[in-house]
Amino acid sequence: MPAISLIIPLYNAEKYLRPCLDSVKNQTFEDMEVICVNDGSTDMTSDIVNEYVAEDSRFRLIEQENAGCSMARNHGLKSALSPYVALLDQDDVLHPQAMEVLYHLITKYGADVAEFTNQTVADEFELKNPPHYDVEKIPAEYSKDAFHYWFKNPKGGSVLVWNRLYKKDAIAGIEFPKDIQPAEDTIFTLKVMYQVLSIVHTDTKLLYYRDSSTSVMNQGKTDKYVRVHAAAGQVLYDYFLKSSRVQNKQDYKLLEKYITRFIFKSVISQPLRRMKDKETRLQSLEKARELALPLYEEGALKPQLLGWRKARACKLFFNGHYALARMFV
Image (cartoon, rainbow, N blue to C red):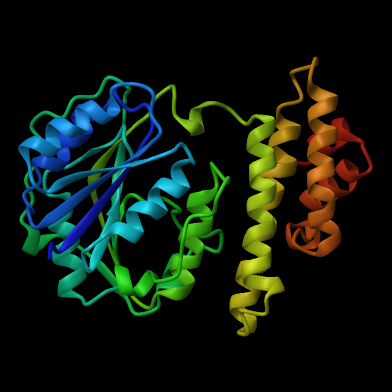
């Protein structure tokens, strides 16, 4: 049984796939399986992966009909054989020691989650002469309380899922939500941090995040972005607050404010900031209000938790005074 299962969801990935897979193949930590889940690609993705499968027994390819990144990740998680699992996106590149460092930290501290940081790089990035680290001297911070460690900043920590190694048993039962992208990482991360016990963190940059013009996050705050985040806000509210899952009052307040901020920023503030597009402005804002209003009426969005300026923005927004509301976001 390999120690780590590394899961890579793929969709029309041929442009950046070889650098990604090369960075995996060249890891100093070799005791792992690499699960590539092809989500119904129509390009050469499968052919490229099969080259690696033929050359390296650690690689395997899973084919599925197009169902989205979340379903591909879930497929990989269910197929993983190892006690530890990690995720990687198709256009990113790992430092050669990424898995070595994560495995060292998670086993040294007996943690449920180990995490590092990443470096944003240009679209045309090529990995050359990466620094070498003495794993025994990697600076790290350990906490027996992952949830409150993540919330040491009241606004919450990183929601990235591909800069972590997870103990598989510790995240049992947690899946990525269907049909929510982007924002699926926020839901998954918040559930993980609430469920697991311990975490170890290093500020060492061990992943190169390609700032690709084709990435989901660089396609702008579209109407789809607003709709998906409204749905994500509902999922978070139902899971943590409406369900009575969270009994501790302090934890409830942290999550209550986090979810309110999340909804306000993505469903109200972002549409208001896009008001310069005169042709679609009113239609987009009306749709955003239609999505936000049920969240407000149900209690998922509580403007009073945001301070007077943003609470004022909410009131104006819900009354259709968009230009005035924009002055307060």
